[in-house]
Image: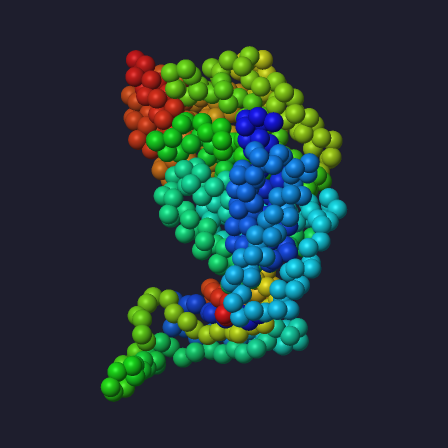
Length: 107
Length: 410
């Protein structure tokens, strides 16, 4: 079972050095214990481009599809047996990156 | 067997077997939705058949077997691609229910799943009332003052989340158990409190259906986790509170305070059972949690012949212990009410006044202040506090009581 573990933030600040170090330790653990699938940090929402090619011609829009106060700053994809395991990992992940986190199952 | 006897047998089977049937089906099919529907169908079949066929010698086994068949039928219907191998397994895996211990485990699993922290509190309450207590959706909607369709959707969404997010169907590990048990107890305490002091202006002031259901479920948890002190504490607290239920509202529908209750009408059997549990916890010599302390406070009250006979210093000492554990403003308010009896209303009022920032929107804060001000002869201020309390109170009996008190001010 895989879960998308999203990092939610409301400031444009990138992770500090201490936070990056804690995230590295956490990532090592995820890999050692077989929970790691993928992870990455994202550039600011203002760097996004939205593409809509449902019509005749592809439309490009500068910026995110939804303006909001809180946004996705990064994510993990984790392998976990069930939600209890995923929540436990996410709880530690939240501490490591010092941000709010959302856990959502893949179908 | 008369129609009434059969109806009684079905009701009794529902009370005693519903949780077991749902739990064992959930375990077997790994799906709350299938378990719930198949169990409900089996009980409906019982209502239909038992009058003609007679009540089976082992109603629980009959219901489990019937529900199992219903579940298999549904899976077959839905399984249009015809997964023959899975179907065969369903067919031949028709094993009888395991020993009592294993079944108890299944019921616990069900409770922990329904009270999972990833579900919203109101959802946990609704799901527990449906899956564990066996209330119907319309009954739960009425109990929680929510529209029936909204309640149905809430329960459906919760079952879908449990499935999609894979909320596990198991008893938490020893390390997680205390926190998870306390989550379950919070759900049961919420159900009980809603029954004991119903919040809505359109319901009875005291709802025996909810208090009785909360006690029944807490007894079940107690039977499954007999060593847990907080479970015993919550059960004792509920029993000692329930014992005073009939004395709590007057014939005219007004709330009767502890001081004015006719103690002769308190339920002696419930009090004896509650006191036994409190003594059991005292003898355990383990630092008590909040429910055990609240139960001990209730035990002091229910041991007194009248309000003057109450050991207030003991009550305040217990509140001191509780404040150390949980310094929330509501606990501080309740402690102050006890202090008023020991050290007088002036001392208590000083503490209560300091809580204004945190409790200004809470009717009991204003009611407590109004009472202290009344006892100090400050009628004008007391009247203003009663006005505020009446404005915020939702319970009809409490509103009636507060209104009379206000109108009696000189």
